[in-house]
Length: 142
Image (cartoon, rainbow, N blue to C red; front, side, top):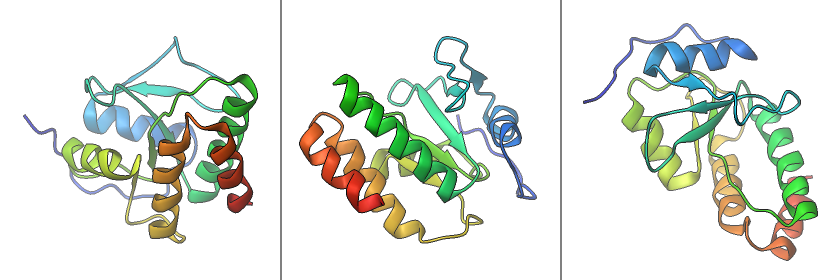
């Protein structure tokens, strides 16, 4: 069954973005996967995408990805956590469809080059297990 919400007003920042997804889809904060520096993961209850990370802007998401991927390459441990950027979609299915295709959901209200960013996220997701290719992608991200 689809969980549907009415349009959000936007302007979410930090914890309010997490709260928006929690309220919209009844997702839960994860205490197991908490990293105060990089944010708090949300448990979706979805078997294919059980954990997501929420961010309020492309710049914050870009910084998160860069730091996460550097850490991944340095530790030789790969784990890609899908991103939800901006306010929630009207349905979880819309979010999960975008995550399946690109590795991220980006709300239409988010400023920036969304199409290009989704391409980078998809490439990073695919390269998580290849540190050499990952380093080249990080260099492209700037």
